[in-house]
Length: 65
Image (cartoon, rainbow, N blue to C red; front, side):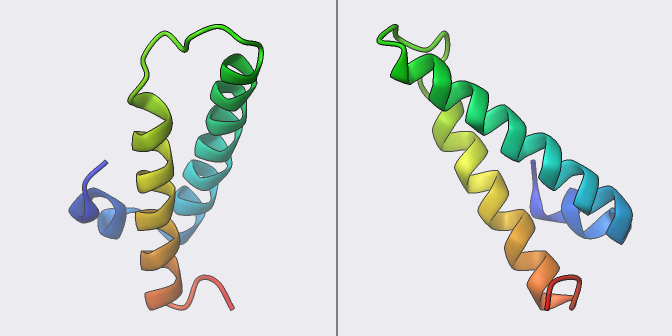
């Protein structure tokens, strides 16, 4: 997800996306910890980076204390 897309979202949309990404990341970590290789190895990295972008923008715009 690009920074421009995140900035275009409303505050509520960002919070919803944040929950979705965190849940998806936990699922990926669960798959990886079961011993099997994840279906897409770069997915965890993508999710972590997208979460960081989202949180950074939310902090910049004052959505998070």
